[in-house]
Length: 172
Image 1 (cartoon, rainbow, N blue to C red):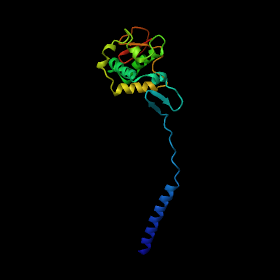
Image 2: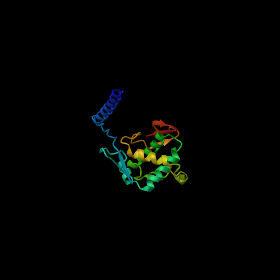
Image 3: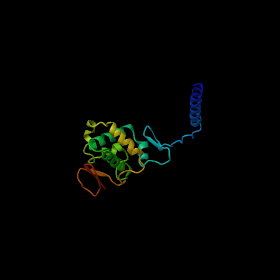
Image 4: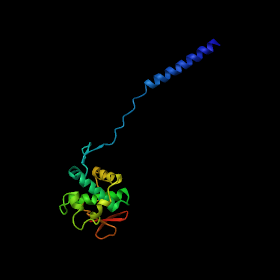
């Protein structure tokens, strides 16, 4: 019996030592490099990979008021649409800001006479977290969903249509 006890003890000790040695000799796990992160400070968007987001110039110069107004327009015009539909509305506004055919700020574009039917009632549509997420997403993207010359949208096709997203037709 003492031999079995010693053998059992030796076996357990050998097994434990083998486990410790096996654990110590395991290869170091490889580090997975995360996707490039985007740092948003104020409205400045910096991509660590060196790729500049498409709407970066607007993101850098937009005031808090501009961001708020953009959020209001997105909610008023497309609050009942998908995330993609809301992004497309934001892109229409930003495409206009970038174009020499329209004013140079979000506020001026939104309040330009006869352009956005909801401009006079934006105070009724304060942005929610969803609209701020839409804005952040648009400011981070390298390639927008809409071409830069898509300046209009409506619930009916009234110009040359680029694409229909949800209930809106996005037009040149």
